[in-house]
Every structure is written in C-alpha cells, then in structure tokens.
Length: 283
Image 1 (tube, rainbow, N blue to C red):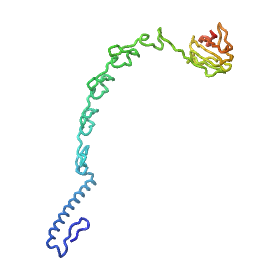
Image 2 (image 1 turned 180 degrees about the vertical axis):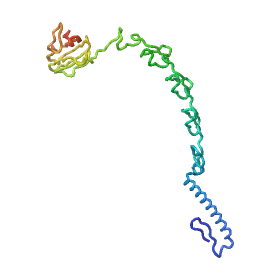
Image 3 (image 1 turned 60 degrees about the vertical axis):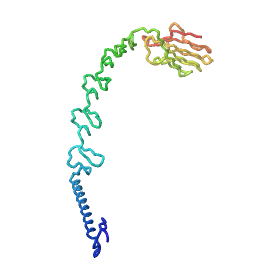
Image 4 (image 1 turned 90 degrees about the vertical axis):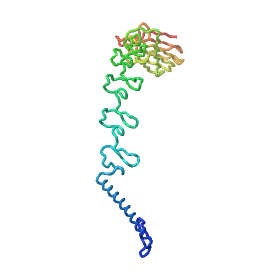
C-alpha cells in the first residue's frame, strides 16, 4: 500500500488489498471532493478580488456600501452613522462622545457658539456655559476707563484717576511716598566722565586716580531737571574741569581737597539749552 505524493491519499495495491480497497478508495474520493471544493471557493474569491469584490467573511466589503468597521476577527460590516463615526450631516457641525458613539453637542452647554450673543462666556456651575456680564465678570474694552477696580461685591467698577491709581500725565499730590534716587557711578576714575540725565539723579565719582573732565550730561533732560554730583579722590587731590557747565552764583571747583567729599549741584535750563552749576559744598 502506498500514498500520493502531494496529499497523502491511500492507493490500493494492484492485485492485492482485496478486502480494503473499497474503504480506501471511498476515503480518498471524499478527500478529493473536499479539496476540490476548497479550491473552487478560493478560486471564486480570487476572481472576486480581481473583479473588485471580496466577501465580508474574508475581510472584504462584499455588497456593503459606505463606511466599514472590523469586528476584530477579520470580518467587516457596515459602520453605523453617529455610533461608529461622526457623519458630516448629523444636524450639528459639532459632536460629542456618548459612551462609545457620537451625539450632537449642545450650544452653550458643551461648547461656546460663535453667535451666542456675547463673545465672552463663563461656567454656570452646572457643567455648562452662560453669558458673562460686562464689568462684573470681565473688564470690557470700552468700559469708559481703561483701569478697573474691585467693587467689593465680586464685580468691577471704573477706577478714579488720582484716587485709585496714579496716571502718567494726571495732576495730583502724593503724600507719604518716598522716591528713591537713581544713583549711578562713573565708569572711570580719571579722564572724561559723562553723566546720563535719563537714568541718573545722583552721579558719583569716587576714588579718583587722576584729573577728570565732567562732560555735558547725555540723554534728553527736561527743563528744571536737577543733577547732584559727588566726588572724592583716592588720597591725592585731583584736578576737576566743569567747563561744560555754566556757573551761576558760585565758582566751579577746580580740584578736590585731599580725602574730602565734594558735592556739586546742577540744573538744566531748557530755555538756554544748558546745564547751570548752582551750588557746591565741600567737607
């Protein structure tokens, strides 16, 4: 007894197996029938693939039209609108998840609509939104005053210039306020030194190691702007040159006094476009 090379079907022995050939032949025919059927089915599927159609049991769409979904086992079926996907014409351009599917989102509950009547919304405490109240929940751009203050009741009210805040150009009197002087040290202890009127109230040149020339202050001074200057040498008297300033009522110092403090006061004259030296004091 032998078998076929490819499928292993039993072949009766010629001139023998007289008592078993019938059973062997029937078993072989059944196997052939099953294999032919399988081959036929596969051939049809292959034909359908070539023709653009594949049954859903084989991962294809079959005769289904529209969107598909897989079941995780290689079989596909039609996807359900608003459950498996968000349809383009669901009635609302905005959707929300609803336990595995989709549902229409509710304006002012799930999202802020563009035409809600107010461009500003606030939470309503119940998971939704409601219109925010101008000057209560937010500061409106056209409130009448660019500065707002709390009104003591959780809202906002217009702040008063000179009472609630100091405006850049408002006329007002300040009390109990200290203005800290802007103190700037000279960048050198000898040679030419130049105060900056835009950043300096007190200009100090201390530990001078040589003669100095005090140049006209840089910057854009205002009429009447004062400038205090403080000098001290390093234990040797140093020459001072204030020729860039106009001395009025005082004599401009020409030297330091050994290890002594020297103060010089100048003020800007906007009419004369010049710095006037109006005071000196020496230790």
